[in-house]
Length: 222
Image: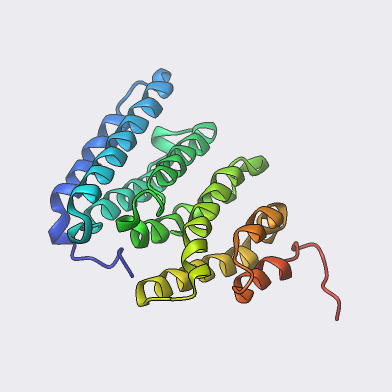
């Protein structure tokens, strides 16, 4: 499920589109930062609508790779040109805008996009950047995304029959929780009850990850 390992020659038009968007943002007057942010949000809103429409129409023939590429490009460009188009205050707002876009594309609403979605929300250009914002500003947004995938998985896992696609999605979800537990244990601890209650009782492994997480500054009993 490595969507980022793609033939770059196949997405030249997408890469050019991203370059155009960020060129416009880059050369906007510095005193119109709110307009830059609004413009980027409009781009994201159009993308969400188009992805949803395309997935609903194509169903099993839906191809998520071009859309993954656009989001991945946006995240890459945000981190490489952050000092040019965004100050520190605006960075969290842009990441929040992306988080809201991902929430709108959650697996329960656009299941055809679920594998690409889960890889996007765990990218190093997104998850750590959002969770490391000052004063935990990004935590509520990422909590929403974690709950999105757990709620989508809950009725499937409760049913008992695990198909190969569900197994892959489960493994990716488990990996995400393990990374959060290791790198951002305070996040897990903060929302422990909310996350734990969604996981079916027989998913002992996932529940144990949530229950066994302790903050970095707390020593576990020997």
